Amino acid sequence: MDVDQALELLKDQGYKYTGKREEMIRVFAKEKRYMSAKEILDYMKPDYPNISFDTIYRNLSLFTELHILEETEFNNERKYRFSCAHKDHHHHLICLRCGKTKHLKLCPLDGLLGDPDDFTITDHKFEIYGYCQQCE
Amino acid sequence: MDVDQALELLKDQGYKYTGKREEMIRVFAKEKRYMSAKEILDYMKPDYPNISFDTIYRNLSLFTELHILEETEFNNERKYRFSCAHKDHHHHLICLRCGKTKHLKLCPLDGLLGDPDDFTITDHKFEIYGYCQQCE
DNA sequence: TTACAAATCGGAATCATTACGATATAATCC
DNA sequence: GGATTATATCGTAATGATTCCGATTTGTAA
Image (cartoon, rainbow over all chains, first blue to last red; front, side, top):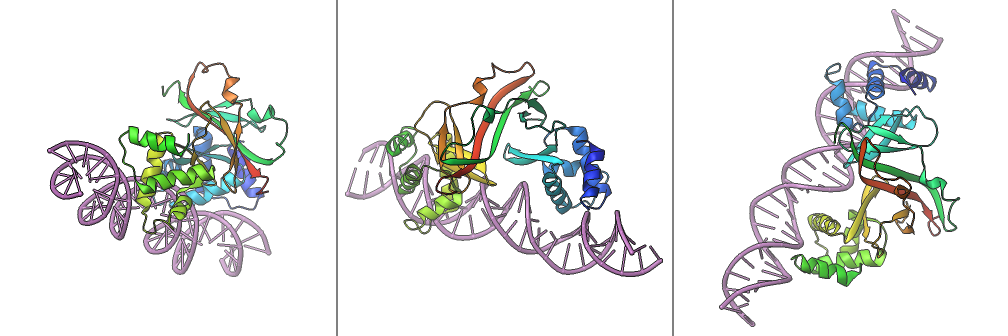
């Protein structure tokens, strides 16, 4: 996923182009790390001093639905990052301070063969937290 | 961990015995599943009609600090469950509807040998979500 | 250029959680 | 057992994140 693909996807799905949407996407594409709604708002403020929380939140949800962004929660905050280039299933090591991630190829579910008898698996979460070299 | 051990632990740490604390612990010990603050409040209401949210939240935090409870977050809600009997490190399959869990022996971190060069691991989360037989 | 649906704004509403002053109560000491 | 004291609780207000909503603006298609 890159900026153009994301904008293309929005257009294809019938959503309108706006400068704010493009900038949001650009920020995520540039930063490549998990950011909170407030953080992304602060990035937008210089260019759009009156931007509304509503706009940020609506677009975060929209982008997540369209898989332009990935969403998770740590440090008691909901955070978003630009969707990884790798299309295949993957997990992350996440820096608790700066939100940067490292890819993990392994998925622990691969070891498990199918669902247990008495439980239907619909989803899973595997995240490793810590501190990256710069933040250490 | 059982009710008596939990009460003992509170006492040892210098916290006072109260009927509300005992009942909270009893509910968790009986239910053995993840519950939200509101859910536990509803369980207490019949016996303590005027119980305050403050009491619930303070005790949930206290119990979590003392490892009487385990805490996690799914369906956009913070939830707590009675700490597992198994002392050793483990993970869960979690029913998204009723909060019941099944133990998982495997820990995906075991495969990884130590920290990567450029990342210090402090914590991790591995949870499998779905529906248990009753909730299916 | 116009018309219409979608996007945004600004602010209010909601929801979960925390904070706080006043009161009640468990544990301790006599 | 009764007084003392620190802790726990209550009731309510404050906070913070997120969502909602009516009014307005703007992108897009005819």
